[in-house]
Length: 200
Image (cartoon, rainbow, N blue to C red; front, side, top):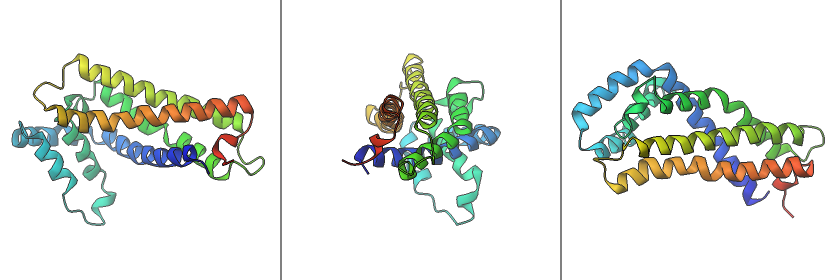
């Protein structure tokens, strides 16, 4: 297994987790809007404090399976970008759409990486086409989202460190790793095999 394969496995599984959270975003938008208003009243000017409170809140086993707990991720992030509590915005719909559409392709590519060397289990043509579409979708969505964030000056009133950590770093993962994924998919389509995932 190559570093490329390991990096895509890690990213694909992270993407599956985030996709589940994005489904929670769509299903619980009314709750997110209410929670956002509460957080705004409590943490306006101290958005960093809201993030720390969310990341360090104690959880029971039952709460780990509660969609509203994961939805608080979005009401907290909305302190940096209010579009995430607005169901009419691009940010809301690109993430909800990614949540609904990227879990099966992520699993397919994972199967190709782990079991792809077994003859006939998955087709490099199928994996290459589906993977290419998925990685381009999430990368393009990220690019447009970041441009929207900057164009609408949503960084105003926030420190450079906060914007870099909570917007820059998190979104950069959905640019860097999809680029690697696109490369792998192009190799599969060009070579007609999945050797790109295998070591020398």
